[in-house]
Length: 363
Image (tube, rainbow, N blue to C red; front, side):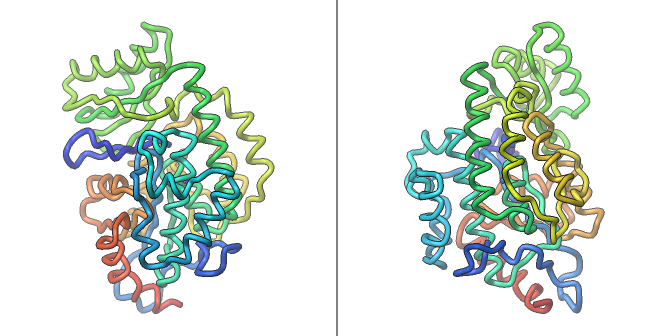
């Protein structure tokens, strides 16, 4: 489920986790269902917005957004602080890094930064045809698609992070990125280690061909790392995450989190949504809530999700939020297509320059 900016190798990013209204429109989804241009568009093909998950956090994230749109501070950041009774904006902007890495903090912080980025892009007329998120990122994707109101999504990701952190407190877990082995080999190694130790060791993320993330109990994951290296992995690197995401250890919190989901209104999507759990389209609110429940312990099928979007006519991917993990994965999964990031002013400006005219034609 996750990806991390602590990259296991040059150019080989991993997502470990795993998820806006126009200016002044804090109660509405950010032009959520407005899809990119399909008439007379100078850029053929569809635009997909991709939202990062845990591991993309960085102290100072989002500050470049406030340089363009100071109003975002009050519209989102200050309100999020009040909703969660937490100095989330200060942690995003100033850290410390150790606190920002706490799963219960990381998840709402990444969500909030992605949400503000989404709002800024919407104001510029840059809107998606398709949305998808890597684990946590699915919550921001659902705001973009009009399914969730952003405050509800913020509360959900905060609770999600707290529950996941609680699992790790009870059963210390770990995650590791395995580079250079095919998925079937990593699955076989996990199954063998689980059988030998009686502990949980599973593939949590299929991030790209040749890059998997494994998750489970700490000792078992250490054995998977060693076995992967013996099998010829280029690298098998422990990830600095706060919990063993997307494995069977998370099943114990599914019921409690399902109760949280039941308290929230899910609307029918007004834009195309791809679920990372199913690597398929989520066509209704019921499908979406079921996928979010399964997501806690289920594998992130990112390679399949990206290929599905490409096969459906997506030609441009925009990573909306902090980091550059997902754009890097897309470049390796579908190198012939274009991938953008928005994590700093230079890259954000490039997205707006490239895609705003396209969206403006349809507006």
